[in-house]
Image (cartoon, rainbow, N blue to C red; front, side, top):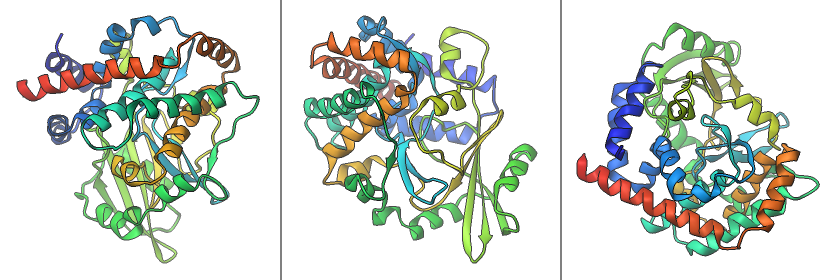
Length: 357
C-alpha cells in the first residue's frame, strides 16, 4: 500500500468512527503537499508502517507506554495550580505501548526532516546526541523532575515568552475564527469549563495542528473579570494503532500516560470520554517550529526534549530499568542511524505524495 492509498484507507476508517470536518481534511492534504515537516506530522499512520520495515531491529526493545506521535512541535507550555509556567509534551492522542525507541526515533527524525528542509539550522548528528544524552540522563536516574520555567531553563523560558507568542497575536487569531454553533455535547462541556459568569461568550471552529486536522475542534471565548478567557474542546478520536492492528476503535490511554509521566498537572486540562478540554491563553500553547529555529539555545532545547521524553517513560520503573540496560548495549550512533533512515523514508513518501496529488 503506497502513501496515497494508505491515507485514503486511514481517513475512510477515521470517518467511519467520528464525524470529520471535510474542509480541514482538504487543508491537511494541502499542508502535506507544501511542507515535508507538516507531512511527517500528518501521517503517523504511515510512520507505523514505515518504522516496522526501516527499524525492524528495534522491535524487541523494551516496551513502555509511549507518546507514539512525538515530534519537535509536540511540546508546549501551561500554568500549574501555583501559577508557574510549565513546559513539556502536550499531546498524547496516540499514546500506546511501544518499544521505547519509537518516541526517540520519531523525535529525532522530525529534527532531521526540519534540518533537511531548511526549517531548522543544526547539525543532525549533534541534535540526535543531545536528545539521547538528555534521555539517558533521566531514564536511569533515581529521581526525575518536571520542567518549571521560573528559576531555571532560561532557553525554554525565552522560547515560551517570545513576543511572537504574545497576547495581541493570540487573541486576534481566536477572535477571527469562524463562528459556529457546536454540537450540543461540545457546547455544554465548553460552557461548563469557562469561568462562572463569563460574558459575551462566542463559539467558533478551531483549526490547529496538522495531525489532528479533520477531528472536530471548537473554541469558546468571552470576558471574565475584565479580561478575555477561552477554552478549547477537541473530540477524542480513536487511536491510530487501532486501525493498524485492526482492533476495536478506542481513544488512547491519555490519563494513564499522564499518571505515569513525571510532570506537573495542568489544572486547565480535562480528559472526558468524548472531548478533551483545554484552557487557552497567551503562552499556553505548543511551541512552533519557527520558535525553535530562532532560539539561541537550540542545544538546551533539544536536550530538554530528550529529558522530557524520559520523564514520560520514567514512571514505569520496571520498564525504565530494562531501558537502561538496553541503552548500554547500543552504539552511540544508533539513534542517528535509525532517525536518518526514517527521515529519508518520510521524504521519499512526501515526494510521492506531491507527485500523485
